[in-house]
Length: 605
Image 1 (tube, rainbow, N blue to C red):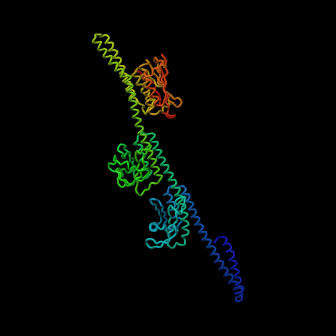
Image 2 (image 1 turned 30 degrees about the horizontal axis):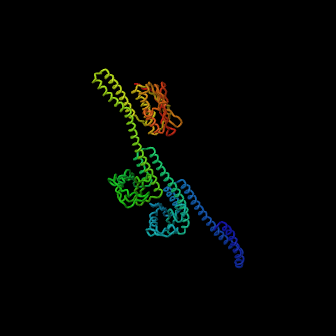
Image 3 (image 1 turned 180 degrees about the vertical axis):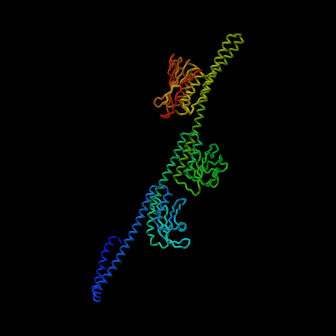
């Protein structure tokens, strides 16, 4: 009854009661009783009626107040729960908060929540939680939440009521696909209160479903971030490291962690034999990889299509039963399969599409690393061949010619000795001695140049400084390096080596042909390039003769080839009596670079 009806009842009933008493006392009792007796009976009945009516009204108001206070407590508890859940993204904390609130506002023997997770989830509180779990487990196929409440019996034969409410699992079709069920176990005589308990359980279930959905969304975002970070880390490793095993180790570690796999392995295809062999593994390797599995072969015909589940073919690399519970993704370079990324998982675990996509991404990263490693190896082989060719041409044009000349000169000197021309023979021997000494100096200088490389600590500028000091001591020429403290010398590693060889060859020409007493190497930035100039105070030459002397200026031609191979330009400026300047321009890799504080201490013998 609402307050509007209560108001009219409270007005109408007293008036009707008073009118009834008045009519009764005047027409029925007045003829049999004296006036004062009738009045006494009237007022006595009136007092009793007022007392009963007041008791009924105030009793109803008291019950209404208690119900209102209980409803207020329930709403406050639900409001507090909502605020508590809004600040939590942990599903365990959500379930704990919901069960605590349910046990506070519901007079139940036990409350519990069961989630439809792949591995199952059951959480209960209260003295009757064992009975509740046994009842729910026995009645699970009937989905008791569909009929909200049911009468049941506990293991000791006591009657009880079980009330349930569905926990929505997502935003679409929540009623058809619940994410779980919220249960309350009541005493058997609580049938009249099940409606209120059901209402509270549904309210709690709505809070639980919304909070769990937020947790799932947050977990999904975190998983996506972790997967993106894993791909990013592997990409950074590929870009910054030339160690293939390190990259593959990181790929298997990420695959094992993010896909919750028991182990992850990478096998590479051996092209001559057409077989796969294990090269990297992560996870529980001891129990998954067969003894002696490293190097064991898996026929190339068993390479699965991208993201296919492992078939029943026996893999000698893995131990049973893991050799059939796998998900494999091929490592593809261009149109060629170079290997496989394989994760080993428990048969009860399912690999979803997002995890399969992650495996495909990691497999592609591993394939890129393998491709880069092979390209780098080919590059090194080409560089070695080119350097051998350069050394062969240099030895042919320098040392071989000197040795050939010495051979002819020795034969001529022998004939002069036979002819008795001792004085002339002595002059030719002295000439041969000077030429041999010059060849010896050239060989020592070539050995020094081959040993010199770009040190990671000092960078290009530091390596140039060290070489100039050694060159000055050997050649007896003052050699200085001039470089600003903020010079950016960030070149590709191959370009650094080529530039160092160019500087070495230029200084060799200064020693052999310029007749100079000093040489200066300047390093500075020009736009987005590194500018290096090698200057001497020697006799110089006519620079216009360089083009006409094609085929004879082997040193300059070699330097130009090296600079062009590194993507730069080389120019020569010289005139008779004014020294020579060789200028090299090379593009920088970035606007930054290594910084070096120059040492301008001249080196002399």
